[in-house]
Length: 564
Image (cartoon, rainbow, N blue to C red; front, side):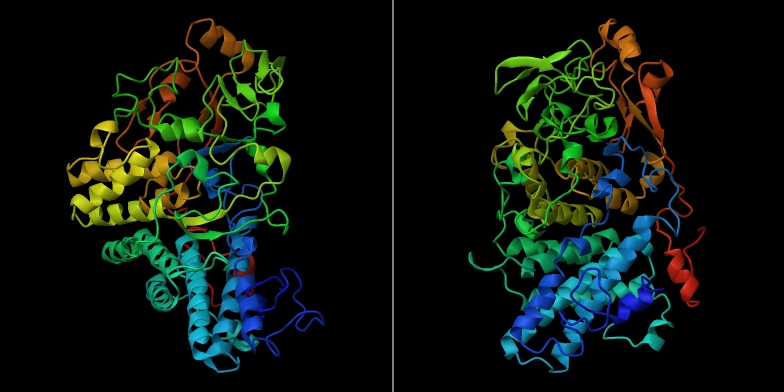
């Protein structure tokens, strides 16, 4: 019971792991929160990675989607095996309620006047704590639906009687917290100040949770308020935006900083890295994502005359080549080429050829799909542990949230097209007004523009952890997460059926359906690709996660989600 929600609800200490009520070296709710320094320290604690990263082994929620593949095979989500004892189900529940408990303790201390803080800073601290609390409750209702909601500090008896509050009521409280935050947080921070939650972050996160629950008017208004601040802009180079060395850009609306020097970094960065450069290529893009990128004429690959399955990176939306390493190009000091005849590859730093470890003829565990991640991966990763800024929400997402909300309201005007075109034009390195220089969006039907907006989100936000929640809120998970995950044939068959037949890299042009998903089954039926995994998604229950079993066992007032 020590790790249960009940204990976490009544403890609000500093330590990440120590739950002792009054450790000698730590502050506690009995004697802390008395001045600016202590309140600031308490708020700082709520920005720790533990409260924002959702997973441990997989780390990126896109492994719950059809965009990424892990050599470790399926996750409990994509295998349909999620249950109340699944590790991350309990981990996210515990960490999120731990953050809520700490935020509530700060709020209570400030509201009860226990802190010796001037009024101006007191209101700002309250706004920050309420922002952070709203973010945590937003996560809970997205994943679990109705959950226990409370404010203030609970005693043990109250904690044991908590029941589930309807998510609609919690959403209203979330809106109220975000509204208070947007009214009282600063619009920006000085260059010498630590970057924290801001007015724009409150607007953006309110737009995100409203969008998830199809509250289109609220999401449109919140996204527009963020845009109207006039302090955010798209970073000019999409490919550079996600690199470790790119910090504190004007595109960041809300981000958690990382620093290797401070011990805050991504421990699994090598799993995205090509084997030639010392990585393991365990985490790779999927065929589903790769074939979904549009061509440079703005058409899907099955409609565009520009697509060539023998040269599939040519004439694609630039974000394809900036997110997935094109074959035959230099990456991390080597020419990346998974072709089975390329047994050696060029080391571009030495000018010498060496064994090609990204070829499955040489290395069994090279990428199973012949694709590796490029977005956010650079030489910095080879010299140090991976510490890119953890982007929670960026301005491109705000623009697309605004556009989606207005499309769903059927209020399609120039502001909608301008928002979408500015995002796409950045990928082409042109101004949004230069409509002849890229495939600009035009006035079309609501249904067609909805389809194009969803494809734009997928291309723009790939590998950023948003695809899974998009599939859930669009109710597409039951469709795409029941498709099989495909990859290349094993080396001998690959050479016989694909290479010797002149079909490298891919044997044909997949059909793209109305939701932007490629149909790869015909190629499998012809024996030209292989099944890597069979996904499963039960629409009768999997749109919500189960309540952790440990919580159900210790609290008779908690009822499990349907069909778990």
